[in-house]
Length: 443
Ligand SMILES: Nc1nc2c(ncn2[C@@H]2O[C@H](COP(=O)(O)OP(=O)(O)OP(=O)(O)O)[C@@H](O)[C@H]2O)c(=O)[nH]1
Ligand SMILES: [Mg+2]
Image (cartoon, rainbow, N blue to C red; front, side, top):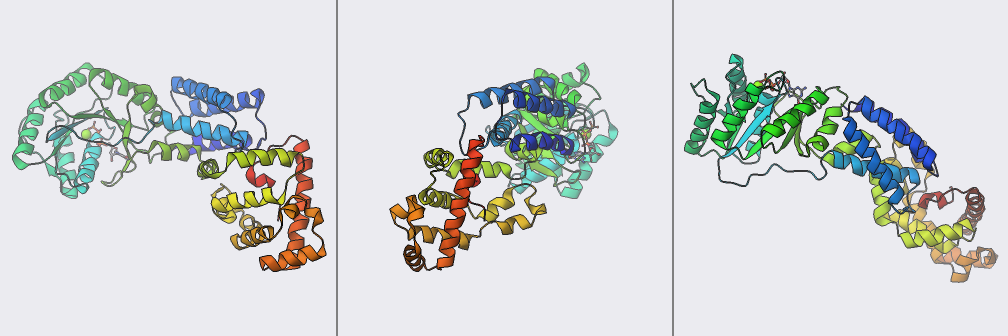
């Protein structure tokens, strides 16, 4: 589904991610590209407008988290906003009233209602419920057979009724469910090519007769904005509770999927991802958002950094780094933070593209090496850690012995530390920002 959009977003975000500073101009340019990418993906223009406005507001207002680059910060905000657009927290389809709980499935023709009723039936049964399926599509003769076939292949009970009246069929199904002791009745309704009066009246009549606990609108993701408009029309005519997106496995541009929750204010419960009975997934806005952003696990990396980096430590350190006063104490606390976040090579793996650059992981010091470096620093006195230049030959020997390493290793560490301190001072003069690992000496 979202491949094209993801591709465009990635290009834009890659540029942002790399930039050390984001000013009004570069932000405006990125926003323009984001707007185009979203509109091209057929996202509702109102949704695009609101989304970008809140990304901008948040980007300006949020205090800069020092552990993230401005580019990463924008990605983080965009991700949060996308999750919001997709409905926020994951919503579970719950039942509260007395059984049997009636669920009315509505939508346009060919949206996937009948298929979804079968899938949902199978899912509810897996959850230990006893669903009864019924088709109230009296317009298309093949419709009931289609549902009956689903019932056979998935071994679900389908209510048989001789009536040719939608309301009667629905009522009979509820009676049958009571008699059999089924706790959910899934009602598959007829669809029309476009929203029309007759379809709405029929759905309203069925709803009035059986008082569904849930009304779900099935939205064909391939249809685009028309399906979203129809969703609003249905929600105006009926107390719709939420949506089920279908055909998310297709190659549509994804705009409908991205607009429907924001336009209607109703959640997306499930997503259909294929024609088979098991191809129904719970809709997780956060997972879908990060899939759309296509930032690999850059987002989880951002999360990790935020969770674990001790901001105060980083802030003081940044100042000292800028002045070229970084001490081995600072260096050690950074090592500890990196170790807290997991190994360096694991962190690198999380970066998109890292898998295509296998040499990268080998360049990073491994965990054992990080531990040895930490041991060396631990064997130093406070004065030595703050003024490494006092570490002469005999001190080196003592430190090596104390840390169970060799004088060569101590020498190597001190040399690299001195080099990186110099480098950092130079870089910082050019106004570069520091990220925790940007301060690390390169090994
Ligand atoms: N790839 C894919 N195909 C789907 C999905 N859901 C439904 N379909 C297909 O879409 C077509 C229409 O599905 P139906 O379930 O008959 O749609 P409907 O809304 O009941 O259609 P009407 O009853 O005619 O209004 C069928 O060929 C289904 O196999 C899905 O999630 N992915
Ligand atoms: Mg149908």
